[in-house]
Length: 296
Image (cartoon, rainbow, N blue to C red; front, side, top):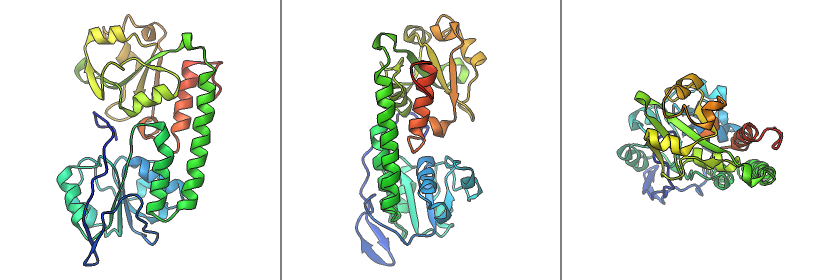
């Protein structure tokens, strides 16, 4: 979920063998309503399952699945992009539900070729795609009605935010730079085709790194030219950064954000997970950008 170069990725077809019989490729439209030992791979998928009331059906999850708190009590099968088939099969799952982009590719091939149904949920970096992600997850576990209700709530929240943001004076739009990391003082920022970039736009901001695609390192000159009014960072983990760390860098010292010490930190899954809580995350950013114009 937090890897660089997040782009639209097609769901790959896979020939599965279940109970010794050949089965059709398992896409998100396949239903497994009886699955009671689900391995959930991807923090957003796990969050959706809990929101649908299926948390008790999860037998294990990956390391990005730390919300809600109850998920942390489940066995951890590792980072979603560095999976081990042996560790997953050891959980004796009857369904593996994974976000598109899980890996590595050879591990996914082994998992798809096994006797356990493997369903991929497409996760494009777009707010408009969140309701479909919720519905696809619901279909996979036989909770279509619950998923449709949650998807409609998210759709309504996104539409309300869109209307609120549209009322902001276009001339006063703020520039936001999402900083993924500051390794060795080098700024890794979110360009287009990223969840962070999409969230900035959803909140009515201007992505200050829109000239690049994916998560890319920026030169000092590029940071200065980006001229962010606000810097957005993750709150915890290896990607966390404080205002002192960011604004002490020469590249940031002349920016409008540095002048106002304007930095907003959010939990990583909340910020770029693009799940049920994304409308709230986008609104939080919008309120920080346009206080008094957008309500909490």
